[in-house]
Image (cartoon, rainbow, N blue to C red; front, side, top):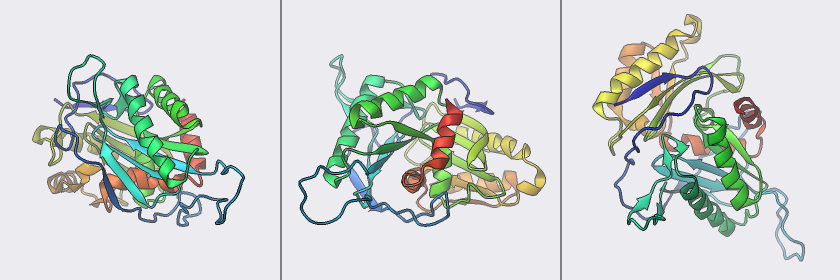
Length: 314
């Protein structure tokens, strides 16, 4: 069953049964999504430049400068990545093949958005990041990766350690809903707070963003999900959780409405239930399943908001 928790600060993570991925239990071929849409950067509201700075044409005997970046979004069911030398989102299952015990079948190292199997997570990160070599963005200057609002300091250290071991650089951790808001085109540093609901395969997060940081949040962990979105029993939990968060906002700040991101934002029944219960405008972001990775790409060239979020979460 769904477990609803309010997260004014970072709550401790509770183990739940593994979430079933959005797609089948097998390992479909990796796929490339359409070219990354240009979303406005969090600072200055200008289009993010995803080109590797300092790289010019012509042969050179000098080694390439460490000026590239990689944006990495490892979710419960899907992993998305973009490097500064690439022009498309690499989208693959959040799984690696093989178990140390010899039991056949894929290993899914992430549950509810946080690392449940550190060894398998390291293998997944190595698989994804080493593919960035082909884009010319290796070795990267930095890697921005998303983490849940409720991720504990230990959860964050596991993510940072895996990135540092594979990429040889420090990871900048960005809370996933903040990145999703940037990727959805919200003015996260503007004078009015933003309300966002991120609906993933095993984790749902409702957040208030004010001044470029998450100031209030509520989290719903799912014990199961389906390829068509949230199971029926979880809809009430998501609506109640979001309504509770909305009630904590002053009335004058609710009129901007709610933006929904994540794969679950394509579930029209969820949007209808939210509109009926909240009585505020509710809409899904464009290509909502890619909002987080788009936001990470936008923050990579100007990671100041990400750095503030990382510092607050330690």
